[in-house]
Each structure stands twice: as C-alpha cells, then as structure tokens.
Length: 564
Image (cartoon, rainbow, N blue to C red; front, top):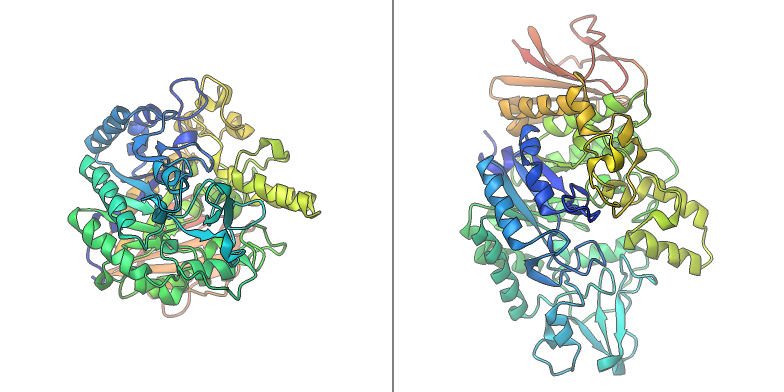
C-alpha cells in the first residue's frame, strides 16, 4: 500500500453553507439548529465529514468571511450552545467536523483593527499592514472584491493606507508579527478543545507578505495571485502552525491553495514537511475561464482531454507522497452538474450521477457541496438586483464605471457567479423549498418544485439521491478506490473518461461517457481480465458487445471489478 491509511483519506466530505441550508426560525437565514435537524439525513448519505462554512460573528460583508469575533457564533446562526449541541449530535452519528479557518484577514469591525486604526503607536497597529501616506501611493496590489481592484485603502484617521487582498472591510492580518500568530494559534486551540476535527484554511498561501512591499511586474490578476501565494515565510508559518497546533490533535487540514502550482505541491503537503495534509488547487476551476481572467467564462467549450489532463497531472504529483483533494464545486463556484455535466432535462440525472461516480472513484479525498446529492443546478439570475454577493456587485459597478460591456458580464455571471451555489437547499416542493417559513435571504432556484428536492427523490426509486447513497457505499467498501493506483486509459478520448484503480490483486474499471450521445468504447490491449462484475451503473447499460468493447449511453457511468 503506497499511502498510510488515515480517516481523512478515507473520508467523504459534505460541505454546508449554513446561511442556505435550513432555517428553523423563519428569519430567512439558515441556522445551526437547522443543521442539527438534518443530521440524520446527512448521516444517511454515507458522508463522514462535514465542512462547515464560517459561523463566527461577522457583519457579513462577505457572508461570514469577514470575522468580527473568532470565538463567538454569528447571532443569525444561533448561539455557542447550539454549536456545542451540533458537535455532540454529530459525534453521536459518527460524523466529524471541519471548520473554516479565515486568518489571512478579519473584519474591519474586529477589535484588533478598531484599535489598530486609532493611532500609529497603538499596540495593535502592527497587527495589520499599513503604508504611511507621506511615503506616497503604495505599490499596486490587486484586490479580489474592491470596486477599483485596488488592495490599498486610504484611512484618514492616521493618514495611512491598509492592505486588503479582498474587500475593504477585510484588512489583511500581519502574520510577520509573532503576536498575531500567537492569537491565531490560541483561537485554533479553543475550537480543537471543543472537539472539532480540523480546518479548511481559507486562502492560506497568502498569509506571508513581503513587508518591503516591492513594486511588482504584474498587470493581470493571476500574476498577483502567484505572487501572493509565494511569500517569503509561507512554509515557516505553516510549519509553525502545524507544530504549535495541528500536531497536538487527531486532526487534518486542507488549504485553499490559489497560486500554488503543481511543481510546488509537495512543498506544502509532503508528509515530511509537516505543513498541510492537502489543499484545493485551482487548475480545474480555471479550465472554463478566459485566459488570464479569474471570473469571466471563456467562449470556447472546454474539452474532456483538457479536463483529464488536469486530473492526470495532479494525481501524478501525489503518486508517491502527499495527498490530493477532489472537488468539482463549492460555495465559490457554479454548480457541478451545470458546469461539468449537462443540466438539461434529458441529461440532468445521468450527468449528476456520473460526476458523483467520478469523485468517488478517484484517488484523493472527495468533497461534495450541499445539494450535489440531489443534482442542484445553476440558478442563472438575469437581474443584478437578485445578486447579494460582493464579488458580483462590485465587479458590476467596476464595469459600469469604466464603460464596459454589462450585457456580456451578466451573461457570463449566469454561468460563473458564486450565487449559483448559494441559493437555499431544496428540501421539498412546498413554498421556498421547505428551506424557510419566512422570506429567504436570496431567491431559490424555481426548479425545486419539479423534482430537484430531497422529498421527491426520497420516494423515487432511481433518483440522484438514492444513487449517491449507493456510490458512497461502494467507495467505503473498496479500499482500492481510495488508495489504489490510478491509470487513465486513452487520455485524448473526447467522449469517454476511462481509468482503472488497482490495489494488490484488486482492479476496478471505471467508464464515464461525458457526452450527449451513445458511444462505443474499446479497451486498450494491455487491460486483460477473465471476468468482470458490474458494481454500479447510473443507467441500464446498453451492455458490452464483446470482451473489449463497451456501449455507453449518454452520460452513463459504470464501475466494473475485473478479475483474472
């Protein structure tokens, strides 16, 4: 066995965006009691780990990623007693909890920043990155969420600029100050001692800054991002974080890794480095975006060969050391079935279950986003007033101010916007999908009333939901699908993604037809077997005609066990 066995490698992660999961108060906003109410449902899915998006106290400029108090629960979501109960009830069901760790930045309403901006000699001044105005305009830094894409904000109170890679209300913390790091480590201990099992670390490669703030030879966002991810002390800080906190618990960490290239991967996750356990890379998330762009969709459709190459390359990176993460969507990206499948009525069910099959038969820890188990799809808002996300709203204002093409932007947002993932969970076909008895904080996708909901799929024999439960069982019952060697067959094939997973004497063949047409696929000559057993399929297989040929329906997924 190549890799040491651990619970987090064998785990299946289910991500919950609490604002949109289940509201129990009629406020229109999901809450912790809503998650508690649905724990039996979550456990029934076969997932083993919940990743909970931020529930800390926040003014919600960026939906909780602007934290005002790291040790307090957001009032909209409930109380610390609710959180403690959630943790207790999860553990009673064998579920583990991963929290979101947001420590590149905090809220400008955090006590640290409120103190920092009072005067230049305030004890908290050095908790943040300040540039005195008498030195002139600071060197350009790009911001994800600023209307002017400027990461420096002038603050008149002390006649200085502060750094914010994200929104103006999200000042970057100064990790170069050991007091900041100590505060963060103490906060992490606070949550671990409550019983959490790990952290998903938000934009973690950005924490180390070159505090000489040099001029950069960078113009496009991706050039800035690559610089942000390679600060001079990034590995020193991650190693210290692991040594001072993570190593003291049976825990794991997964970093959000924008700017980390494939040749840097093992610098972050090799076991000997003692930094992170895995991270989310962004190569796949960039596949269908315009070159050099972070947000706009490209006009030419992506090719399956491109999709395969990304997974092949990253699997190779972790073939002998480290460990990878597998995801197709999350709270920051469009819905998986709309992006990588085909969400039209004819192919919605098969493409949703094909993508589930893919994630659960690849090497790496699979991450699913709430609603993936019922095939939730993009809402595709057409009116800017329907959007609540600071990213969409500020980019709209930027384009408007600069006389850009708002029609093209809005068309792209139908497919690219983060809001596609953030509409409320569909529990049933009643008003507001059973999410709330009040007015939801954001509009639902109207297809909740036509089969894209939990209640309808519970009673439908061949639903996406029932398939999800079956395929999670297949993964958990076969360690070869977790730890086995991976071989991609015919990487240039533009309709079928075929691969094997092999461990010891066991071999599984996975065939996925990523197209709207029936395809006949022939195995390469080196794949030899005497007998095959169909483990699972998302469709009535049109059946293989010969030993080497397989006929696959549109968006069909099938897993075989091969035996000699």
